[in-house]
Length: 458
Image (cartoon, rainbow, N blue to C red; front, side, top):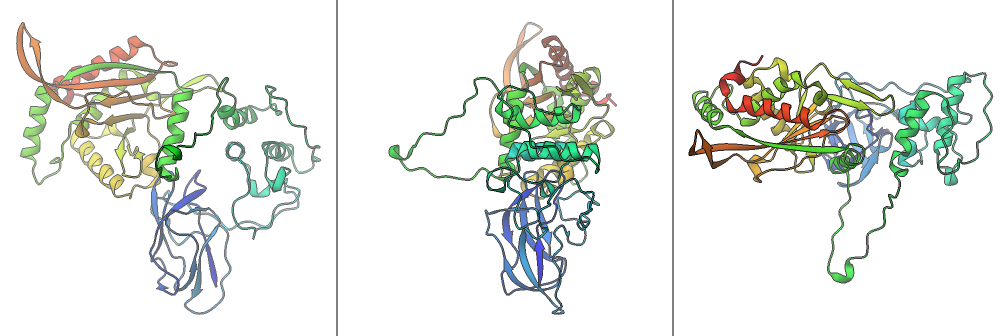
């Protein structure tokens, strides 16, 4: 019997929600045939079967959350020979949604010099008990939780356990384990002199040290009428976490303006008709906006940056990967157009069409969602005159596009009907001021109002 465990699905992914099983117990499956669809907080992936044979059992039903390293299926080999279950075995070839070329080697035998005093047995099922803040701390320090000796109640790994493990590893195998430190008093600094420890300490405790923040439990609404509960999972949970992080850590400011896109819309519609059945037939206003944003970012690098609050530095990115917000049906995803500054408007339009389609179908890969430097969210096709978007952390700005409407405006003393596009730039006030935002949006409105000038941008 082969016990198949949920493989590593990508960097920073520790669990996934089962969407659909392609087989049932008793079915025969071929090697590399689809086994199960799993949705992580980054993308939906289809995991193929690593073996051919008869499916003896599966673990979990659609909607259940399974963890990396957890047995999710038992397969009887077609040849009938027993097979050992590798705790980190990946199926041949990366699963759809996993970074290309990513493999997970089998776990190495424990070394006598291992910093952990008593590593838990490799056959221990399920995840290591630890709070989310402790897991974040472990990821920051590169500490494998499975090798940390737990001292918390019920075998739970605590933040102090992770710190002691990291300190012993940094000191070398000869260092004697220090005695357990007493819990720190509220408000005192965490142990550890290194910048790495300070960074991890900040990440682990940022959510619980905000003055006056007191999250109260929801009241019971059932006396007032029927209610329905839905778990906050996968992509929707990831969106919730990022939005809370952004709204708490980033001082948002919004600058609003309007662009007269009458000439641009005429040009775009003519080109769509001319290119029918050819590349560029799906030419959208968003494609022109991406080109305009790249041009404006060259003169406003603060909006193509990230803030490092621990080093007190601003990281200016010299590349232009523009994210576009897509409604996937299961939550908002932001796939990235890489190297947007090196693409033509037609190529940008094709990339938008491809990413939006795969986003709706749940076929985006993890790499499609990484490396963005600036985000555009366009609610115009859905309606709404304007919006104030939340910055896609750790970026420093996001552009919101509203619905293009015909409106009467004054031009040269005459009232004329023009097509007007509302724009909102939400930006991080730590890196830019209102004047910077005004100049940036002025550039956008100028380029979007004159397609000839926009097409001259390279």
